[in-house]
Amino acid sequence: MNRIGLKLVLVVFIYFLTALSLFPQINRVPNLKLYDDEPLHFGFILAVNQMDFILKPKENIHQLYFKGTQIPEVDMKLTAIDSATVYGIEALPRLGFSVGIVGDKRIGEYFNLRLIPSLSFGSRELLYDTRVFTKSGDTLQRVLNQKINSTFVEFPFYLKYNSKRVHNFRAYVNTGIKYSFDLASQANKTEPNNYEPKLFRSDSYYMFSVGTDIYMNWFKFGVELSMSYGMRDMLLRENNLYTNSIESLRSKIFMLTFTCIDPDQ
Figure 1 (cartoon, rainbow, N blue to C red):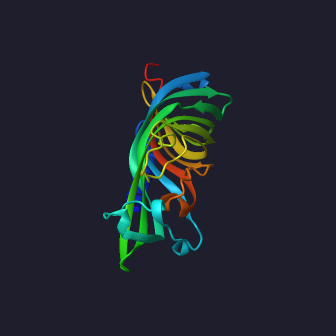
Figure 2 (spheres, rainbow, N blue to C red):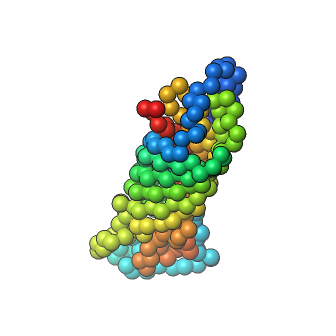
Figure 3 (spheres, rainbow, N blue to C red):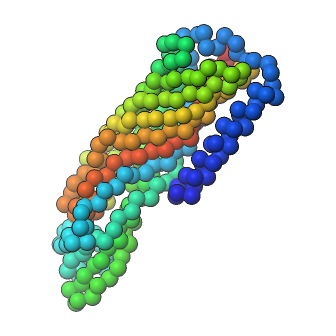
């Protein structure tokens, strides 16, 4: 998902919240009056995610020259290449989706603890703007594209602060941490002439989200926008053009989440 797509998601999210805030003015009958008095609730989530990187290239990156086995194949035989350098790197986010279950524990009038074991599917891309110098003296420009797929098993743990309920509407903010494990990581695979950037399997995130709960007739429906920022440099160093040109590579994930809590209440 590009930057325009993210802006569109944000506009839709704000529009949706505005429409929901007007809903109580139309229907004055409160639903699930005793819902918040119960100590424990369960449910599930469906989400659209956008996986991205916080990318920091090496300083003076274009002054780094790579030779021999440090250079990936760029539509020519390696024997024709003398050296290569990188002029720029760009991270491109892509859309994915997530599913999970929700455990919600009430610890006060306005506070809840929330655990959401989930499974997230997505991908990201790295674009390398390179200059390849051949042994015959030619200089060629090549843009190398590396797609990194991920399948995360995630364990987010939130402290949720709820506003005062207004009829069938209640806003909230979450803050917390998340541990994730990437089932699709290639970190343990060693293949000759495989230059694909590899990420470590595990990471921890700090998280923040805002959302709203809507009390329906038979369940509580929620809409939430969340941001997660990885704490670890995820790039596995392998002494080649793809890894030696990057100072640090951290994960960044945005999610638009829909929750359904206690549908059988």
